[in-house]
Image 1 (cartoon, rainbow, N blue to C red):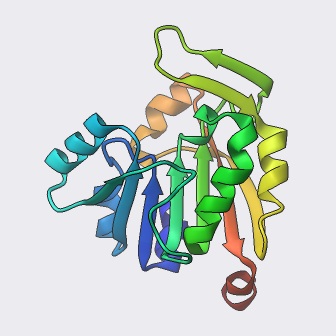
Image 2: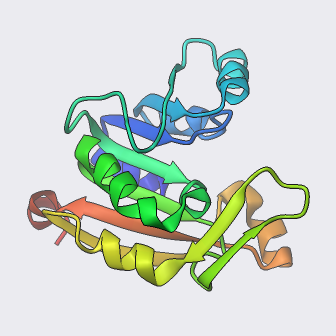
Image 3: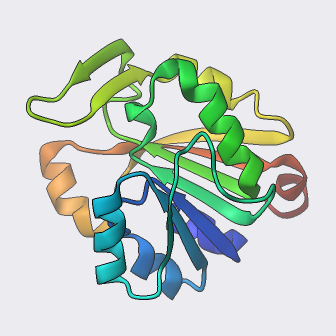
Length: 184
C-alpha cells in the first residue's frame, strides 16, 4: 500500500491514524504527511512520538480540508467501525479531499462479513462487517476506477500474521484520468 502511495507521491492524508505508526515509513518515502484522528489521547501520543507531525482532531465525515488537497488519502482499520449507513458520506468525504488516489484498508474479517455487527469482548469499538454494501458504494465514486486486493499485510508483521492467518483487504480507488494517463 505504501508503494502505491509513493508511486503517486506528494501529499498524503491518513484518516484515523491512531498514534501514527505509519508516519515514519511514509515520510521516509518522501511523502508530506498530514493526519486526522478522532481520539485526543491518540493525537497527544502521536505528537510525543513524532514531534512536528501535522495531525488534527476530526471526523471522517467532515474533514477540515479543501477539495483535492491530497495526492493520496489513506484510511486503515477505520471502516469496519463505521455504521454501514454512513459509508456513502464517509467515502464521498475521503474522495472529495483526494486528488489522485484513495486507499482504504480493512481487517481480515471485513471481506468475509455478511451483515455481521458485534463488539469484541472488552473492546471499545463496535465492528460492522458488510463487505458487499461497502464495495458496491465504492464503485460509484464519480470519476474513479477501483479494485480491491485481499491478503495485504505489513512487511514487519508478515511472520506473525502468516502464523495467525491474519491479512487485510485493501480498496484502491484511482482518479480515472490519472489512471488512464499513468497506469494503464
